[in-house]
Image (tube, rainbow, N blue to C red; front, side, top):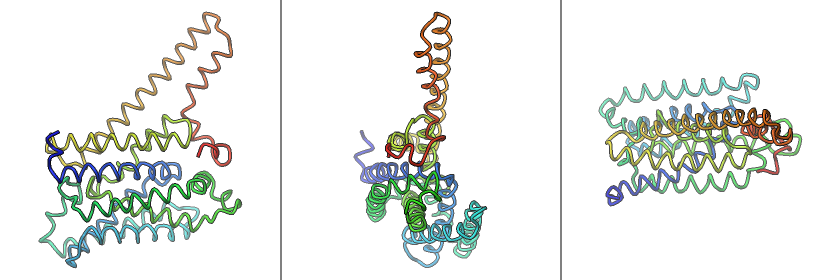
Amino acid sequence: MEMLHYDFMQRAFLAGGIIALVASVLGVYLMLRRQALMADMLSHVSLAGVAAGAYLNVNPTVTGFAVAVIGAVAVEFVRRSYKTYSEISVAIIMIGGLSSAVVLMNLNKGVTKSFSSYLFGSVVAVNQTELLLMLGVAAVGGFFFTIFRRPLYQMTFDEETAKTNGVPVQWISLLFSVMTGMIVAAAMPIVGVLLVSSLIVLPAALAIRISSSFTSAIVIAMGIGLFGVLSGLTASYELSTPPGGTIALTLLLILVCGISVRKLVVKLSKSRNKSNAAKGISVGSIGVHARYGHSSSSIHTTGGNENESMV
């Protein structure tokens, strides 16, 4: 393909593919932990780091990365202070990040225009340093999710039970927050600050909806994320549109189509059940089809030790 003859497109596709895989895995955990908004919050906090870097004449990518990690740690500590209302931590940190970004951007008006690439993403924004940063984050993320997959799985459904089983919940939860901040910051050059959560949440939203186990949800999310990013980057190049918005729309379209197909399959399955019942087909056969029609929701209703063998 012609676009792959350009170095910046090669870097964009490589970076997009790397981030898509690790971000999709993160998305599954965030969705099941009811923390989907955390990715959006950290992306806005990282904008304050980008603005600080521009104001201090430091690499904005590095400062954005550092502030995102600091914000992730701050969220975890605030969350512990409001155990009953843990979602308040997201609002508090987001307010601090956005207000800081607005003030810093106003202090350095000369670089306001350059922020469009950070807000909406840019295929030419991925330089060699950012690519190496993404490779490092992907490697650390892969190691983290492999080593802690079972503790994270237990914590996802019931932190108290995990703590009773000897899992160091506080430390792993803190590491998970830091990992979230790192992935969000690394994804900024591809999809931009405003849409980075789409890369994390949308593949996981469809995967959880159509999968029957925790492991299959992760695998499906990775496939959807990778396909959505590569398709979105291709469409962005051909149509000369911002990559962040194009990738987000592509993933959203995949989500809508996936849910629609699933509903159609369930509807056809129920219709077939009724037809078989009318013809006198055995009750056992009907039960199998009925269970199939609801199998995709099993990941929502079961957890802990019941599905631990699936991890």
